[in-house]
Image 1: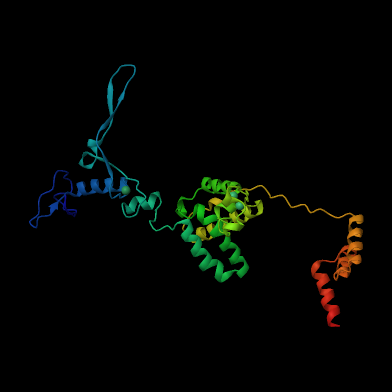
Image 2: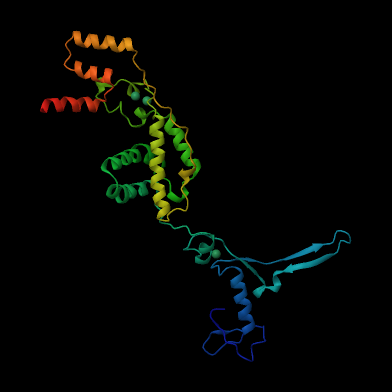
Length: 291
Ligand SMILES: [Zn+2]
Ligand SMILES: [Zn+2]
Ligand SMILES: [Zn+2]
């Protein structure tokens, strides 16, 4: 059938045989045939490239061994059963891509999206310092590992593997810090003595948070349907414990500073005796200078 001219012609409406050729070369089919063809099209969801199945299913009665026909594609229009191809690409089958989820061929790579996010979302809307921090994390810790992946194919597993890698890789080696030093000043990774400068747990958490923020925007922009970073939990990094001087140590320090006529002796006293912060002491100094 090249072109179907379907009209409920009273003479053809009950017929189901092959149509008669019209004068202009097009084939005329009966209304019943047209309806059968229409039903077939609807059953495969108007798929452009349906899979054509031909055959029959018989049931065997175990007790008697008799076979009884259950289904035969001969009952379908043209003797074939049409099953939707299920292709998710719109260019291949628009009908199936609408049902099984479209895969747009222009989904960006993670690296491309991160650059766009920094330029169009972070830089114009957030503080310069925040932009600098995000840019640094993208450039050093995200893009080299995940940048090549297509955004919609990034999985939770990829993110776990990336974070584990960050916890074990020497940053000095990967960023070539020691190699960048003048030859005479190279002291570790470049001369085969890896310094094992792994990323601190806080920085690893910050790298994850950076990626999570970017992917949240990708979800909002409907490029991806969910954020794979949101399920990733990291152990809370341990707070750095600072050692505290004893009263005796503080007294010895002050005595030594006074003996040496240290210019900041008064500041030390304010800090150690009154518990002032650095900023407060500086304020006190500046204030006294002005008056
Ligand atoms: Zn299809
Ligand atoms: Zn090193
Ligand atoms: Zn190293």
